[in-house]
Length: 331
Image (cartoon, rainbow, N blue to C red):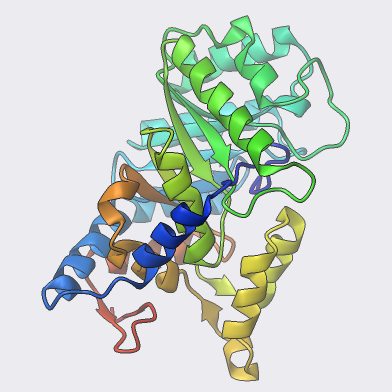
């Protein structure tokens, strides 16, 4: 997985007044008619969710073809051991199966302007790619001239007529080494740069295990931008698997809350699912202020398992828990 996107992490700087607004959004009481509305929102968000798969994950691509609805956005991750041939072939297979392939382009792993030009041309011409996810890449030393995703976007190679949308990374839990104001300014600049290319920007966020930082980040972002946001969620997986990826990707505070929720030995032995976050975001009083919003699934437990779970949710096969904490899939 290229779930970690270093130095592209964006997180809010929130005033006291805004903090009160966020807390009110989280705790606002629901009306008697809300449960049906919440169910409708949850099912709708599940139907429109996007997913990701590794270029060489033939089983994952098979699962996407078998389980997902035509037109679903499926991002193709950039892993260091993959080559451009694998990236193009995976994207082409997804396109031919009726999906919307969104290959990741990792700035620090692109070796030259010529490499970028050739790769983008092949993705567009051979795989029908119209959208990209631009990330910095999780390596300390750049392989070529691009130090970060902003430098990549500035390349003339992005002047591909077929490209219509560039997705950028968003990070609700921020970055431990870069202050929030700088991160927000960087994301704002990249959104402007994408628009200057005549393309539509969008944001796909890092996965998170708690709705609170997501809501804070989203409300702050919505004060500045109306571009589509897809909230990263970890698909069903064992807690040890999730904690391993959280450690790799620097997902800290919400991972600790995940441990708290799964403290018993019994809970450690079963899958953890993202239903608490999905429900919290679907029933918040600020729901309409967050739009356009969707979900992007990181299938750490396998794409087939994730797609089956989300498919049940999309079909309405779930019940809201009386405890107001998530929901239970019933089919």
